[in-house]
Image 1: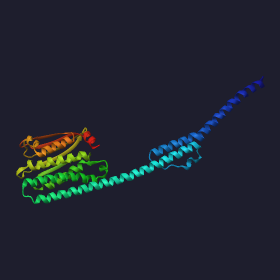
Image 2 (image 1 turned 45 degrees about the horizontal axis):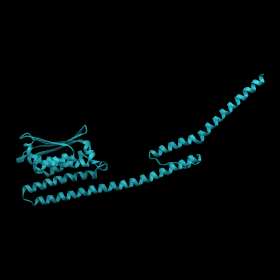
Image 3 (image 1 turned 90 degrees about the vertical axis):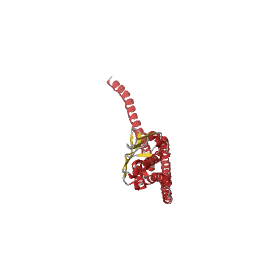
Image 4 (image 1 turned 180 degrees about the vertical axis):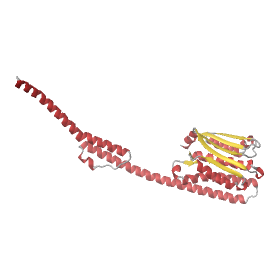
Length: 301
């Protein structure tokens, strides 16, 4: 009976042991021949996805045939992507260089036009005509400043943006020089360093030029002294440009019918904003533009 029991036990345990050994062999073979190569291919794909295309083709020559073919396809795809990225980068660099050169040339051409207007103004005796040429020079100079910044500040210009603080500070320097005959009037600019799209910067600059030159021309007659302040800020996606002076003031209805007032209203509409002019005799004048910043971004796109 003992012999019979042992034979029964052996007949039951041997198949189980054989099955366990077979499972162990399958697991070892699957891990050794398939799973580790799949994990390696997964790591390789992640490496390619992160932009690192330096793969090791020879490493997968020892892999199973199908996995080796898959590795070859991944490496071929990586080489194609790397070649395309290089070509795109070369094209982008050429476009960036061309764009910067265009901004530089436009800036130079606008400065030439401004100089010609200055020469022409020196030969005109009519004060009204000379004033009109001076106003035109200021507008052209403001546009030249935009293109100068787009040329010099390459990081922002690559995205079509202009630093508003740099722009307003340069514009104030230019307007002070243009009105140096009114040296008793102080012009100050205040804006945080932040970028705005170029489609946003153009109407902002032209509106600021109109408001500041109007303050110089009408706010301080008889060589009176005073101050003009230009301020720009953004709060809760709402941008505000304010030009305020402590001059003699005037009836706001008069400026809305003038050419300068109509131009400022057109610039405000271009930005999708609202223009408010507050003034009264002896109390100074404030020109305030408010517009939603997202509107200007959408227009730039």
